[in-house]
Image (tube, rainbow, N blue to C red; front, side, top):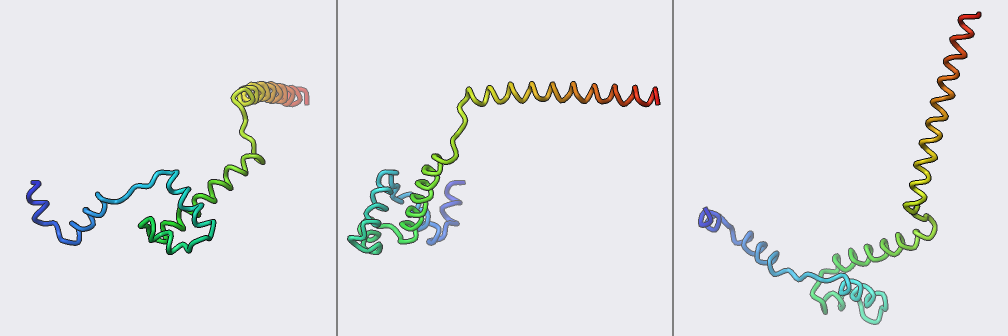
Length: 119
């Protein structure tokens, strides 16, 4: 079976597979370093991409992701996440309110039936 796959493989597919296997993988720190280097504007984006062997589109993708992550992190100051203790307290309060509502609904039904009986 393996030999059949190699026989049917076109040169284009072989090149794609070879590129995929030899593709460079950049760490998060490397990506940040490259983006920050681009933000310094000491050299053009084209030169930076040539230096690291990446496409300009990839640089701009990393740049966008970098700013989106920063924006998301900074917005955390405005929208605070609830702690587990707060969540627990809110769940307890929710259960108490549900019980109170159920009790009031039961009393309302009893009053309605009493009024129908008397009325």
